[in-house]
Length: 230
Length: 230
Image 1: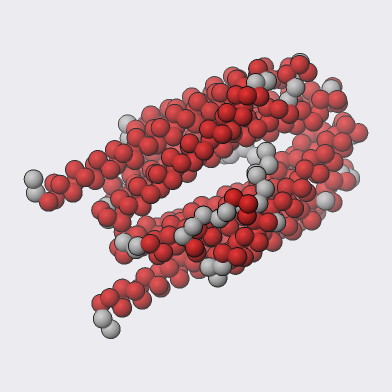
Image 2: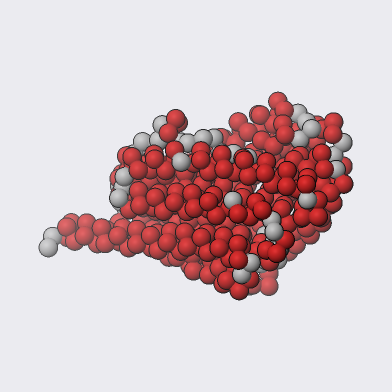
């Protein structure tokens, strides 16, 4: 085999490893979000503590992505498309790590929310979480398939998560007014809703990175979903 | 000049550029936090809108850091200390960009908080913001001076910001109970307090990166400040 071909093969293998690590990170992050909402619903403090501890696995994978990406850039000095791909992987890993942090954050609030308090808005969160998880899942599929059209579809769904958040915000504020004794707990639910909304924003950011990596151009403003909510 | 010396000189110049861009980003982010809290206090919607728009400058600088860091890694293939330095710059730029987002987020909430409503907890926020700004300022000084001891000092101060947040959380919840009509607005203040607390966490993260870049070892667990609040 010629040296040139050998280099290309080594590069492709390394990029494949990078994508594999990111798929692993994404799988763990999706799982963490779903588990965190489930633990919250069941007021399962043991599982909540497990989710908090497991976040370290995602952090560790991010370090591996970073080390591998830097090694690829330094050793192979990839150009154009290939370089865009490696840099995208590096950045996407950073975003998934943050998504994992949001899941951890939800788990950390579980002890502060009393399931026996019959907090009605608690029942709305799983549907919002399902939307956010779907966005994370689909954007990582788009990355794996280098599919810019699929990335645009993910962005379009960010509006649904934002709308969900905005109506939940109103529901929670109303609930606070009607149940002053639960205000502290509802404040924690407000932060949890916000975390889910931010996960949607981050999936949108990843979608923009996937689009750029795949096409070399930035996604059109109109496709970038809604302006981030506050 | 020998080629080797020439390469070293070019590398040092590029690293200097990288540090200069990060100092610029940090300056803009500090300014944005202070201005956002000031605009909130004065209910100055014009300045709040300006702060939101100006965040693009920080994003642009981050892109420049990224492009330069990738070019340095690809062209110079730096080893050990030098590579750690370039990767730290890349990561620190990402964190400052997030700090800028928090300032933007505070500015975005300004129209939602009615200054004439005489919301008393509003008067506590500037002191908390001053603490957070100081941490950002000092950690970037530590990066510029490659001073690991100064980085440890920044981490130690995260506890003060966390304590501030925790007591503010209680004050705000109590205020909600006593002023049900202001619950919506206070909820926004709660998010603003959280944003400032997160800025402190991010300054701590940067401090850990500065420490690692300067020493090649990770900061001892006990020096990393408090566990991040939820």
